[in-house]
Length: 339
Ligand code: SF4
Image (cartoon, rainbow, N blue to C red; front, side):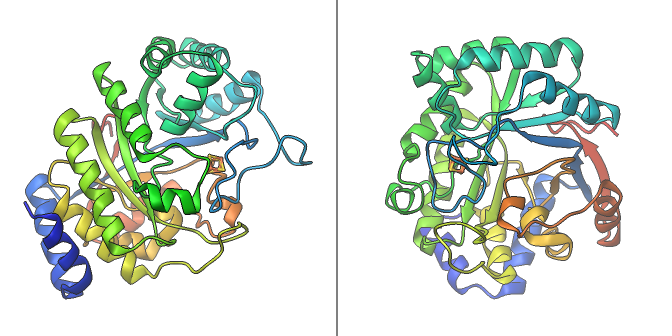
């Protein structure tokens, strides 16, 4: 276990190769087998209409924009059918904060999905969406989560965490929930026995201190709840949005990834982000603490909107893992190996 001060020092000063070695040692202590997992999944973005207007986001549209959309339940079910047909198990449904959608839409949607595809695990709705739904439907967060859970929601993705420091959030997503609200959703979900993941989008305007503060807050919440199955850091993608700026280097990505693995001793899985880093860097990530390649993503629209998304199919992911000397295994959302 290392302190926040030591984590900051590692991030800023440790030799690159030594940092990778140290992260790898911890990875192999937690997962002694040279297995790298991945999940067959699909991201469905039910709407791009969003009231939040985050400055880093290239995906959202205003209601009257020509390319604004809201998918019908029938359209979503068709996409889930395609996922089911290729043996997929995880469904990540996320979207904008739509001004007119309340809890009824999701209760109906999740109910239909579970009725037709009972084996699909619904890992959906970020904390910002949960809070938005609770406000639209005049419900407490706990009641919102209870209703969604009863409808079929099993796991909550940590999207929208960005950096869990309000000064940074005010700069990059001033209308979005505070870090305390993000934390509250995860805490309430944990009371219901649900699980989820934590993320971090870095490389925009935050400092190294902010990154460590983010990791510290995740670690403390994990200590209290045991809620997070995995931690997934990725880099800000600066295309076609208001915030602009530059993309973080692969070198910096790997440093942050390694420090995350070393510092978050109480989170079992660290995921490489091939969507933002590409195949080669995500392969290297396996030597900097990552033990999971994330999803095959039959569909993804949010990173794609920036123009910076990498594409890989399932065979390529498997090949990358094997080439690096690891054994690829398919998992589900619960990190149970199924193939
Ligand atoms: S990141 Fe999410 S909440 Fe922010 S503008 Fe984009 S869709 Fe809306």
